[in-house]
Image 1: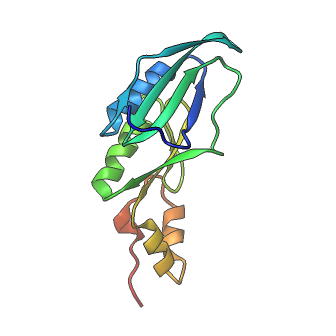
Image 2 (image 1 turned 135 degrees about the vertical axis):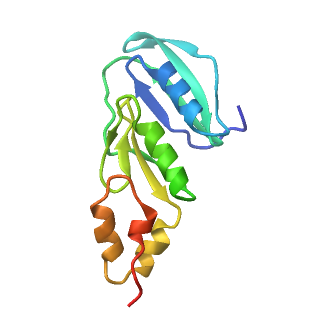
Length: 153
């Protein structure tokens, strides 16, 4: 893996860390995963820990039992260049049991929350003095960039 980053997201899974590592590295470019390390003395006994790199960002995934579940309080944002990229990540991350949320949010099949958004969302929202962009986005699940553009009055 590449150089050590100061802060690394750490995801606790019941038994699915290896499957999640394979799933995520199959979706994101510039990704890789390590062979699992084994750690004893966890709440579930022996745990498997995977180091993955997704688009240059390090993550640690661990199998450690059913004691904790994911929720929407934590999510990962995927900033997309265009609609094709939004469509790609939306389809991949919701496949095989994932679920759609509102305003670009979704949960993957492991229950991890993601926000799939266009890079230009911030500029569209800040330029919109009438709130039309926000109102359009609130009606969407997957964000459609073209539907966020509002006519200048």
